[in-house]
Length: 322
Image (cartoon, rainbow, N blue to C red):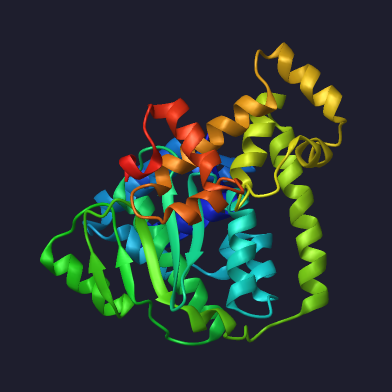
């Protein structure tokens, strides 16, 4: 079940609550959930909060406003990890590696060429545009806080459409053109942004927090049956390169043989789960990602391996699916 951390959910609730403190619906429907302070909030409850915010504000871009208001501490320990990064490249790497701890609702992928870098974010399940807007806006808001700069991306791609007035609001704040009805949600920015230093760099603290977060990922997966735990670990990987049975079994603190045996009891295997994760990522990337980048993202070493699995999945080569 997809979910967000309570801190990520609560920061949106506080923003809406502070603007509509007299609203009985917000207090009545969600106050009990907020009072219980669960470690994880189901995606359905997070989307319900955004819908309530949309109704109360009457603002069709309420997700955008919530993304602008995001603070690094709203990401919990991950926020402190990126704050101690040496540059934007390390901060992005940290966000990609541990994004599922904050919100296990989408897949983020980083690619680059000789001049530009691209961050793509695709929902794992169908999401309303407010959740997408908050996520994409928060990426830029967090980067500006880290670098203490009003830098702007080159382009923002959105998978849905907005009216002209809304488009103008987005373009003014992002400082770039916004393309609508794209096959993916993505931010394009100059490659040299990656070397911009973070103002609050602290390498020793960064290493310590990363160790804590690595344990958090394991604990996050421990709350599920083994099949789901393995699937969650695979989904949490920025790239599937180098991922194998030994590395996953080690992360779960068990032997490869024990993991194989327990997965067999659940009528599955590591190979099947890895294949499912690869197929999911392929379908999210094929619309607007180079085949060579897809090969790397899926953990293959050769184009021929991607060709083979595409023939198995779809009966077509990847080039014919572009």
